[in-house]
Length: 458
Ligand code: SF4
Ligand code: SF4
Image 1 (spheres, rainbow, N blue to C red):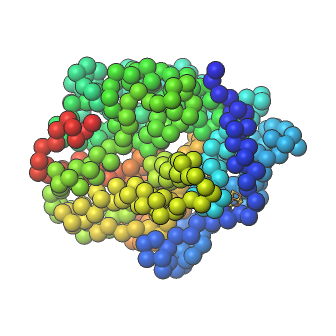
Image 2 (image 1 turned 45 degrees about the vertical axis):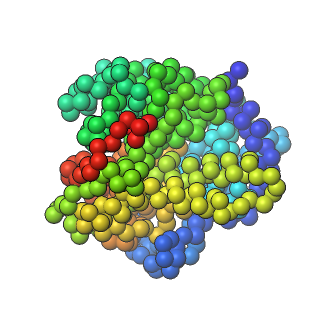
Image 3 (image 1 turned 60 degrees about the vertical axis):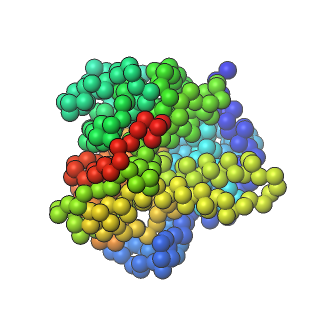
């Protein structure tokens, strides 16, 4: 029988009661990479002191009140489980404006899986009969009718592929590999879909685009509409059951297939393996099968990288939880975790460092990166439900890129791309926002030194 939100919340009881309300999860310390800090910066959202600890919970920064910071939400979960509090619309309005960015989880020395707790709390709240907020209700209605939250028509899902001359890959029956495009890249940021598929084509990959693909369910897992999310998950598992590997260009879809599906589906394991496209490109660089061509337009441009929460910290938290489960005693060997995290976060940086070497860009890091990266503000149902809060958070991230004089702010997720692009324009941050793979395709930078084979892709 499918798990309910209350089942998950009850499973997490031990974790919830580990919270000592120390509130360390309000701040992120990150002097990465120099640990020196870069001092005070006058941004579009006011002055920020990039030195030592910085306020890091977007929900707390936006609303200020105790209940909105993570520690408040964990104590709401505690009160629900101990019967001291009932779910009401007032409780919902405190737990919903949270980006589920996981910064709190990364900062918590008690290793509490806060995102799991917040998402289960939301699911239990909705199951108890408290309605979703109107804006979330609307996206649920759209996805139920059209299998995507944007209101796009089914026969237009692969329009971008047909327009870009990539039709031969749609329902390509001979392929063992699929590219799951996701709703944002299919209906909104088609640049990301085109760039990724063209890159796969240039590398000689035989892949399929499955036109029956439906929304991955990410927004619905996040806002607590678990029935809707699980129904979408079942459709995707059926649609992709005949391939061996699925590639992604969206951080949120990748996280949802890889981390959420195994937690909510009946089977223990996915029937295919999953990887983000940037992992493949990084591996081909490391294996010396590809490099990049010089480009006069990009030469000397200062480029920075935003780690999407869903491909960055959320995977880091999973590695941490996995290590805790495997640990025979209470002492967690941090060296193992640090090494795994370093390898993980280095993957997109392998691409950027190669671009620096071959193309002549100047790659600089923002003050908060990797596990401590500041969120772009789009996730957790916040862009749909609380757009002003969402864009103010994105603008805080753009401030951080401005503080290192970036000409180009790159990322590897169409949803981050959208929110950062909107904030960049709305608040006049004056940068260009683009995907790393988009940069490679649009500037025709790919230089294949040894043709990859199917073995490289699988
Ligand atoms: S979640 Fe962790 S860091 Fe935050 S208040 Fe609780 S124990 Fe402290
Ligand atoms: S997930 Fe992000 S927004 Fe939500 S409480 Fe934690 S740090 Fe704040």
